[in-house]
Length: 298
Length: 320
Image (cartoon, rainbow over all chains, first blue to last red; front, top):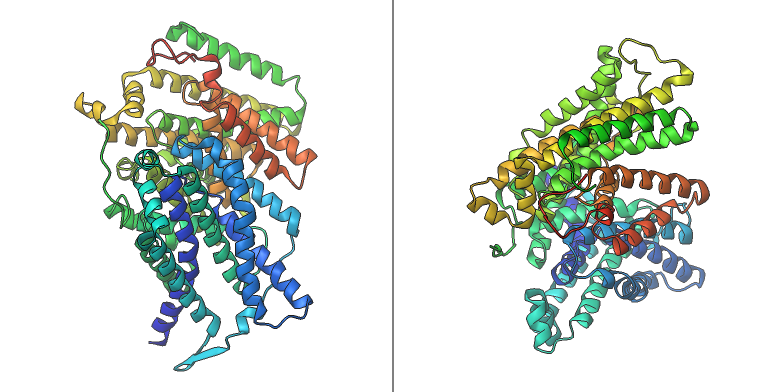
């Protein structure tokens, strides 16, 4: 019973930050039709920026609760600085090209950002432990859980809800949906498609950076954090169906639970449990769980 | 280039290989090693080109690269098979056999899904290899020096002999690939790239073609892996890691799907860029590689092969 609870809570915690990251990935794919390998690098940037911001806050003798604000600011800063630079300066040149070619463009971006983060932050790990202990512990039965984990789940729910609401209940969101559906028709109706691209990309990067900032207290922030995240969040969006919010949520839960099941029952399988689940889902639902069927070209 | 018959093609290919092997005797050691690596890695990318001609790209060819490499290294260490040619062939056969059961499954997928599923497969292998202690875990293990046709290879000559073996095998595979591309089945793949549904209406089977291409790509990649490990003398799970696969895809895209020769040219170019940037910018060589990638994709989008093969004229017939 306790074991089951452990698996469940670990899985859901893992799923919550993963959902935030994958949501960004799926949004960028939905609008720009780019499967962004560099997404993990933006996650890493968010984590590094959070480490720096929290560090500055501490050196300025600000209240510990400021570190939460610092983490949010870090994500905003990454989105505001890096997203326009990449979208306007780089991706723009490649719009409309083959999907696989675009994947390679983002792969190149990933390589570049990998070294850039090393140049800026060095190769030594950073630790941001203050926020992790801020919410105390929660006792359930005989086990004790870190309060921060539950806060993380709540944040994920709020973020997911906000994105869903923004897309389905606001004017701008409907415009974005129109662009996802057909860029050409939307543009002939007077939608500024290029602006929508920039917006969607910025939000996607913000979500990646936010995921990174929120997990920074739980991990040691060091070179290489981006790599693992890319592949896992890919698995999530592939399982859920590319471009679907519900899909990202379900996919994150499936991946989170599968991983924590593996960690607690068969640790050897931790590294590849995620891919096995993905392969099984794709075997039965080739387009993912929530993907609409697309017409074939004759 | 231009008109060619199979006979002339073979003569030209063999001549090129002989010239390169002869030239290798005059090259400094670092250069022969670089070209050896370029040729053995190029084989894996050649496998991706086989798939690319059918309109799909595998992001997980590290799978067969690792399979071929581990097969050769294990045969050497555990069973005492030491012949370089035999090990190369064994690497290919093991990889092809391994991909066989997955081929019909993967043949159902296209585009990004095919890419991601192949990537998942390679990462499962990576996870397994990193955890199995018998195989050295994430450190991998070393492999001794191969022999050639019963001859032991002395210190001074082993690099050059492996260079000659790798170039000959890679050249042979390249020629066979060219013949395959121009065969009926090879042309069906090319038609799939244009429009799969039409291929089906004309009585071809797109799935069958893709499944066969996947196994062929597995074989070629396995040979590449075996040749690589023989020259390196070491293998570790990174052979199957996704960044390794990414480099193979990059070479395939850089080469384009039109020319076999371009694959090896692209592979050499990548090795040159990699060694020079790790020599001159040791801390930022990934950055240099990324920039190089971007420049290539921006300015040579259809690959190096498109530089000397015109697109107009008969699209189905292409020169080497």
